[in-house]
Structure formats: structure tokens, C-alpha cells
Length: 149
Image (cartoon, rainbow, N blue to C red; front, side):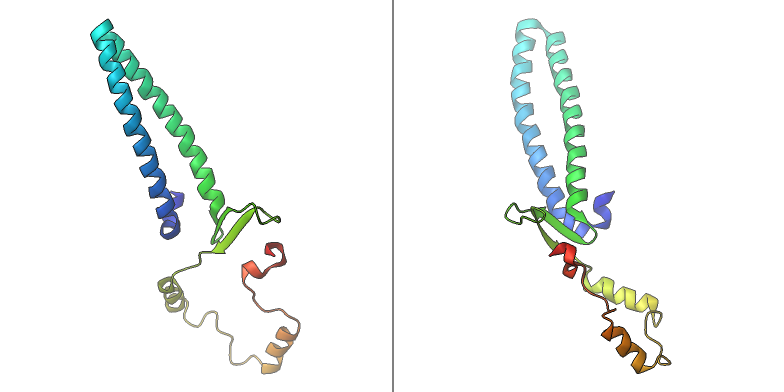
């Protein structure tokens, strides 16, 4: 479910992981098939079925563990509108952070749906706005905060 809300940026990472897991399974299943056939020929169908069943149960358990870990990686990488990846050369956080932001269509939708709600009313005196600017009470980009420097 986490990926749905962040699909534009998460999808390529998710698809890469799925392709890698699928390739690993294909390789493993080819090996298991050979082993199961040998067991079938040497010890009969029950031994082959037991081996394939054991592999399947273990593979499912391992996939669940791997996918749970992967969710944690996605959650920590794609949060709060950023893409944070490991970068050991950055001594502050060992990460490279870039904003992923919203698409222009989302910006347009916000403008259309909110109308004049966030506009500064014309009744506000220009001097009051200058006072806000002089007090440096204006919005800044998140990545400009001292904590990200």
C-alpha cells in the first residue's frame, strides 16, 4: 500500500526488486526441479514431493522476510516528499537527499480545488507583509533548513 501513494517514484525501485526476486526464483526452481527428479527416480514420488514442499515453504518464508525488509527500505528512502539514498561521502547523514515533490498536474489541481483560500486578502496592508518579510517569517524549502545542511 505504501507504493500506491508514491507510485511515480517508488515504481521503478519496486519493479527492479520484483524482477530480481523473480529471476532468483527461476534459477532456484530449475535447480530444485533437477533435484526433485533425481529424488523421484531414486527414492520415489514421496521423497520428491517432500523436497519440493520443503523448498516451497522455505522459499515463502524467506520471501516474506525479504519483502518485510524491503518495505522498511522503501519507507525510509521515500518519505516526506524526498528520496534519501545511502551516500557514505556525506558525513552528516551518510545519505544523499533529493526532493521528489509533486507533479505540475498536482499543483494545478491544488490551485483549482482551493481557489482563493490560501491567497492573502487584499485587506492586508502592504506594510504588514513587509514586517513579516523583515522578521524572516517567510516559507522556505524543506531542504534549506539547517538540519539538512
